[in-house]
Amino acid sequence: MPRVGLCNADVVAAGATLADDVGFANLALGTLAQRLGVRTPSLYKHIDSLADLRHSIATLAITELDQQVRDAMHGRSGTEALAAFATAFRNYLVAHPGRYAATIGEPYSGPEDPMLHSGSRLLQSLEAVLHGYGIDETDMVHAMRSIRGALHGFATLQTSNGFQWSEDTDLSFDWMIRFIDQGLTQIGSRRTDLHGQVAD
Image (cartoon, rainbow, N blue to C red; front, side, top):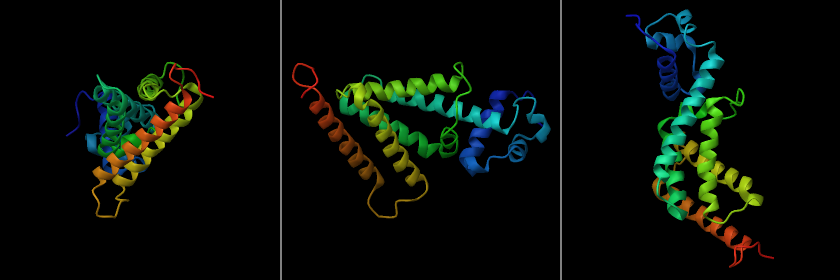
């Protein structure tokens, strides 16, 4: 039976769920229309194109991820904040691999793009974690890329069944967080002296 009262948010949400189910690369308007109980041309009343849907899914994913990370980090600092950020990031990617994949390499449409605002808040959360370790602007970009790469790689391998060993992946993830924590601690302590000034 055709859907009555379908709106843009419904189409994007269904598209995101479809991406999680079949993989973002396999997202197709025909399959989405069938899932929603409408004909494919009816989708164009709510989205401009497949590219528009992909961007909207990426925006939804970044917004959801930003909210979950900030909720997890609330009231935490130092190692606890790092662990909260990392765990929330991993949990989201594992639960929503398709919609997360939509965010990889998706360009911003302009300064008013909601994805840009959510993405900026997500980066600010990570910056807050790193500032807690004394990481300064000289190392900030490198630290952020390293952490993102580690979390992305771990969770992507997990969702792809890339860990074939019998050891519990949760234990390995906790080990990785401790590894990152120790590295950030060493960098932060090396960059600053007891007076908070850059060390020689």
